[in-house]
Length: 217
Ligand code: GLN
Image 1 (cartoon, rainbow, N blue to C red):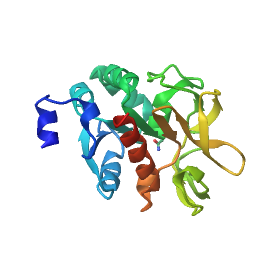
Image 2: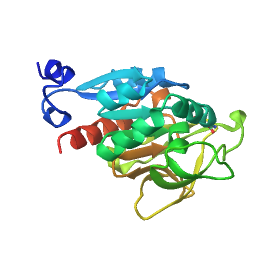
Image 3: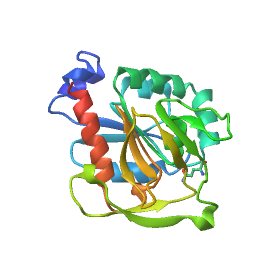
Image 4: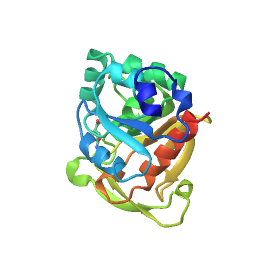
């Protein structure tokens, strides 16, 4: 019933208590389908692919920006005015989770590039920092915020490197070298690897909980 009321605008987002959180996966380019499949494994989530500014404004409690090619996604975001919708909704409390390309687009600084970006996190990144496609790698990460000491398999594909973060940004997981690969600033979460390519749903669950907590504020 609540969702029908919400669809017809009788109640606002803050009245979501007890119902499902709505997570959109930005489907402009990249591996969005895999994120959708992962979200479908988690209880209490209503997930769908979103492509328009209107869907982001009217439907999403949280948004995933998947891996792909950041120059292309940045251009498409601008063309369809999805960028402004995301920026406005994040200011209102929508959560956003960028993986790889998504992390690049959330950053304030992209080394050596003036490509379009959202500039929502106080981070600087270097694209393709670990080399070409053939240099992609996997490693096991300890991610304490996931609530267990079980290591998480992390797949890096032409991944960006976080070269600096401000004191506003929290590093949630690091490589052995000390480089941050999962960071959070308020309602923005960014990671340089691809949990959607594994069967481990914990990072997605973390984002769902982060979104649920924001919706209930
Ligand atoms: N190398 C890509 C870019 O710069 C990101 C790769 C990915 O999303 N897996 O946009």
